Length: 148
Image (cartoon, rainbow, N blue to C red; front, side, top):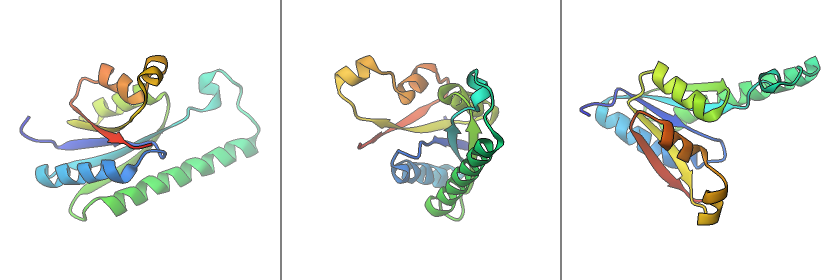
């Protein structure tokens, strides 16, 4: 791998985003890469088999999504160097499938994700998103341990 033209950072607002962005910024500077920051929001209720709710509920959800997108744009602005091109993406869907689909569409060369440190029993009983990505991704990944 000679170059990393496109780097994707998959974030959950519960993660330590700053830790992930430090790595993304450093690699982007070295390889003159574009950084895509992706957050996958929960799917629309009718996506999972429910009828859409009242309009005011849909309006509230729309405002929440706008606020999350503004937060992602702020992350781009605050954590990436000025000479690094960054773009914030907020997409609804199933997390693992959406991350992998977007990575393929955008020709991502490296996917950066955070991994939580859990006990062996927790890992045995509950599969994490980062572990699912590791199993299914066909592109290089950088996993950063995140303290809970």
